[in-house]
Length: 412
Ligand SMILES: Cc1cc2nc3c(=O)[nH]c(=O)nc-3n(C[C@H](O)[C@H](O)[C@H](O)COP(=O)(O)OP(=O)(O)OC[C@H]3O[C@@H](n4cnc5c(N)ncnc54)[C@H](O)[C@@H]3O)c2cc1C
Image 1 (cartoon, protein in one colour):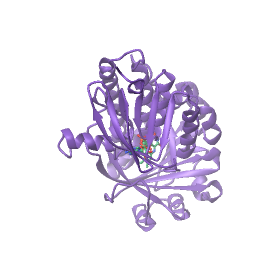
Image 2 (cartoon, protein in one colour; image 1 turned 90 degrees about the horizontal axis):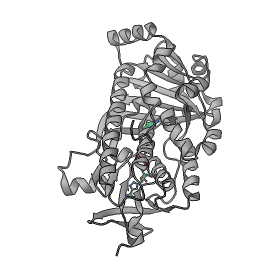
Image 3 (cartoon, protein in one colour; image 1 turned 180 degrees about the vertical axis):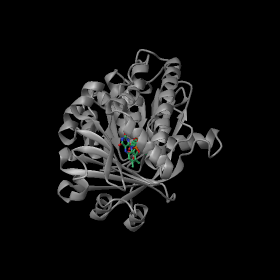
Image 4 (cartoon, protein in one colour; image 1 turned 180 degrees about the horizontal axis):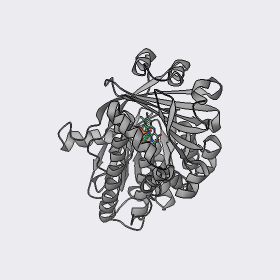
């Protein structure tokens, strides 16, 4: 006879993918057991832009009321010439974006989103979360999947009907599959030759030369130039600013949080405007993150094992959609699965088909942005002319497919 525990859903990893998936499935009536190897959910990372395709889903999960007071709804999005410190494009966001896409475009600190999600997870009667619980391995049987977990040095086994690997770009679940079934390189995360440098400054310390180049202080701006770009946006209800500089760089290991030598960063932006130079100098410390992507995203590994978020499809941040894709995975999976069904094979196949098409399209947009953002010489000139010829509304229309998308619509 089947044990009732074998009916629950197991999740490895309580990042953005894990927590949003737990909430979406729990709302559908599933019982969820989530394991997170970190003993506490720390403030890893810095800012996040959350576009309407993500915020409409977070609204349904009931986390926006806690998140919004800490977030910012930027008034505009600028593409800036990084050398001349002049706007190439200004796109209206704020209330216009909310009306156009029926959900707000916000910027926030990752820790604030994490805290709002954690509060909802802890309050949900269908979710159990174990912190300090490292999922070591999994075993798939005909009727269940079992995970082996090191929980504060105690080894225990837990079983369920599905295992969701939400364990990030260096996913242990994916690595386990690779060892069993695949040549080593086939689905390993690949270094993209880019480094992301991040810092956060209190608003009083953001250089005036930078702020005065933008008409609206509460805006997202992308400063473009040869081989690099700088993204800036307000977080913490406007009390701080998040900066992310993307440069070429070398693979220096699998960590998300390394202290960088800012002299190398400053060299990458030499010859850029004073506004950019002042920002680079103003920050006492830049953290740098080598950027990885999954060359071959795959979600459904087996009818009992699914990878979600970065574990499946880590992507470069050129479209600012990595977290949004994880949140979309959660909504889509929950919409496809039903607690009444015992065999999810058909639902999972439909889920994977829909998600892979969407993820591929978003990743293509990221590649296009990368080309446009880091252009130099005649390509940059052509880009700037093209930007001038288009009306602001054309740029908004161009984003409709991305931001209007509802991942919970299984017919989309
Ligand atoms: C520079 C940069 C800027 C970005 N900006 C944006 C942006 O503006 N907008 C956006 O949408 N996205 C952005 N992203 C992408 C976004 O941060 C990621 O896509 C997102 O955080 C992935 O979430 P995840 O839950 O899949 O993985 P993670 O956040 O990595 O979470 C994985 C979790 O699994 C846990 N774990 C790992 N192994 C185990 C194990 N064996 N057992 C138990 N737990 C385990 C980890 O401790 C972690 O908590 C950016 C990324 C970068 C690098």
